[in-house]
Image (cartoon, one colour):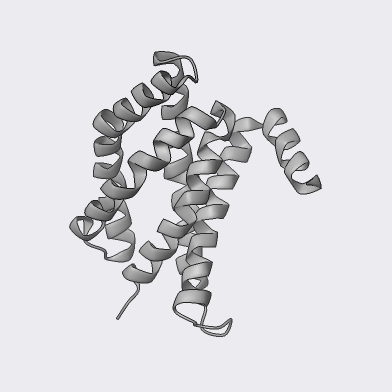
Length: 165
């Protein structure tokens, strides 16, 4: 609990910095999980550059883009009722997600050699449910962290899939 309170204090004092570091850390964690638990590389065979690529992608692309989008979305549709959450999810999935994924997947593919088509189908099944809960249950300043926590699982899969030989 003390760690959570420290996170909340840091988020209140420096929201943008904490969100960027959170996104980068959780994307890096996804890669570490992939390398250590899925691929079972061990510490000797861990590819640090690969983890740093994921951290950089989280800090430099995911956090700024998603963090900015969540702010815009909250201005467009203020409120946290069930109807508001549904509207946000529909706008997010119908308008923003295709644009974001249209940038993210080619970037990820470029960095890791993945096919965007392979990942698209799985993303389409996962994110609408996550976002509906996110917009309904989670205050604005925690949304990026919540999405990134869910994304740890996805990032682990992406990292594993990208680095299969």
